[in-house]
Image 1 (tube, rainbow, N blue to C red):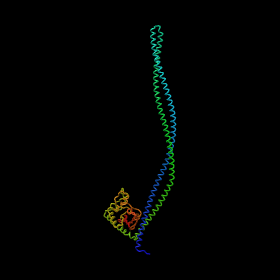
Image 2: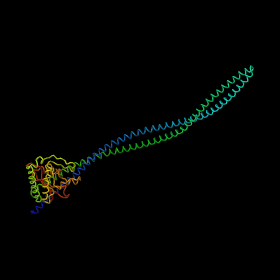
Image 3: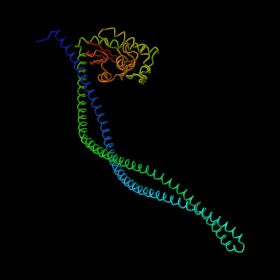
Image 4: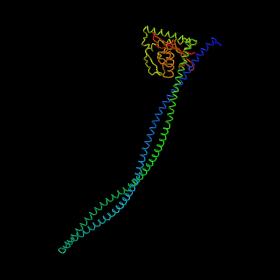
Length: 462
């Protein structure tokens, strides 16, 4: 059955719509795959970082094992030395105890010696007294002998000898007393020092006891440290074994991720190819003249392209704009811009002359979303006023509304810039449009003084 013209027109429009939906679907699928690839890349980077951390951790664990082994050796050595020191302290205490006992006995003997010296002093005093008495008797005898005359001479000689003996005895007694006093004084000092020594030795004995207890406590602590080191060594060995066991799993994950990346890359290439094919179908469909809804916008885009060519060439002829500035490809990044924005020698002139024309052309049809001139490398020297707002620093705001000075050069942009046909059609989802809106785009080549500069683009929503 033959279709009516109305049915044929609807079929053509439906086909154009389907091409657009396929293109957008492919773009969205490509975006999803791209996000998955980015996630896979991030996973690969995270995995590489995990590998580096694991390797470093394995080295650190090995170092801990070595350090723990060294610490255990040092603990064993310290414990042996502490035990030997404890035995030395015990032996010293025993020897010190014997010395204290000896000092105690010496103190007892010194006390006895002092008592004996006291007896000697009393005896010396008695001798001195006897010598004094004997001296007096000898003096009296000598006086009596002188009185007796010749008869007393012999007695006088005896009296003189007795007197001499008394004096010698007294001198000896005095010397003995002095010596005894000196010995008594020294004995008293020695006895005092021995007493003080005995008191200090008691304190020293207590300190020896405390030192022995302290050494014993340190020995126990070293033993506990050694036990902890043994536990650390055991756990470190288990952790190292666990890392080694996880190495195979990490390698499997890395291999699987690489395989997923390869598959996603292949799928993205196929989706990109399908998207390009759908766009070619849409372009061919519009070029065939069968898509009546799109033709008015194609004609409008061609007309506006000629207007921009006339406007720009007039400025070139008047000297208001130079070819050097027009075709300046040196992009100078605007400091602090995010996303990155650039300026060239054309930017100021384009802001003043192209932007008002963009705003005017947008008002020609309510379906028009944007009108813009893009260079052969995708650079936008200026944009419509709506999308040339002052940056706020908010990335979401600046991404959507600060599009002047940006570079867009991917997908169908590349195809359109390389095409020499009168126009190129494309379908995509515009980042500044409603999230569910399918945007159609017309690329019309711009040539100034016969030289291809880029394209005039009109994006619209049906």
